[in-house]
Amino acid sequence: MLLTLPDMLTADELRRIREILRGAAWVDGRETAGFQAAAVKNNQQLAPRGDMARALQGIVLAALSRHPTFFSAVLPKRVLPPMFNRYAGDANTYGDHVDQAIRFVPDSNQRLRTDISCTLFFSAPEEYDGGELVMEDAFGGRRVKLPAGHLVLYPSTTVHRVEPVTRGERLASFFWIESMVRSTEQRRLLYDLDMALMKLRERDPDSDVSVTLSGTYHNLLRLWADT
Ligand code: NI
Image (cartoon, rainbow, N blue to C red; front, side, top):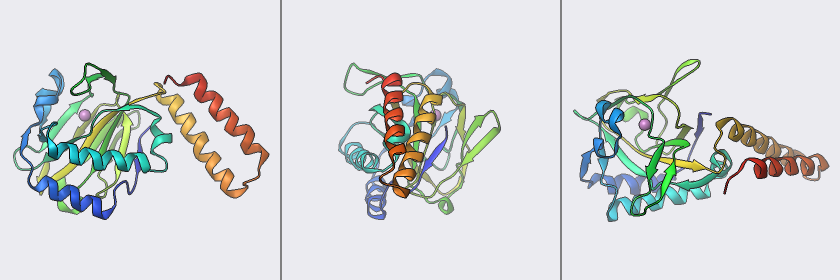
């Protein structure tokens, strides 16, 4: 499922992130791309190690963990340390590709299966032209360009691209999640059930139906999750 989660970052966090990124030494984005993706990738990234990346990762990861529906939407097993990119000038686009299925967790010998791809926008849409994230799905293309501080997540199985940025710069964080629930369809059912349960509890806190449905939610999770 494609899901947008608004207001992941506070205005203060956004300011801090953009301040840090102003002093960034950007490197060629092809360094972290697989063979097919490297052929169509033309952007810049922050070197994934170092104090700057670590400070930014801390802000983003803290925002994810406090968000009220992020956990339910992705059921994370592991999150790859967020990375940061820039589309501007001559390095301004990323053609059609599917993200690599397996990635190595930096500074470890662990591997992570990419189930969910995330983009967290740092630039406001009016600061740049182009730069839409386009996902191909059964209904044609979905074009996403979100306000600064908003996040989009989508199945990593999706063919997607970033349209050329023709004015200004597009700063964002991108990262992958291995979910406890591998199947997108099962994750979707669990998310819908959890959101419906939240509404039900608000409307009727003493509802015995919500006890039964909570049980169903957790028993489905037990059936499908791999911790
Ligand atoms: Ni990608």
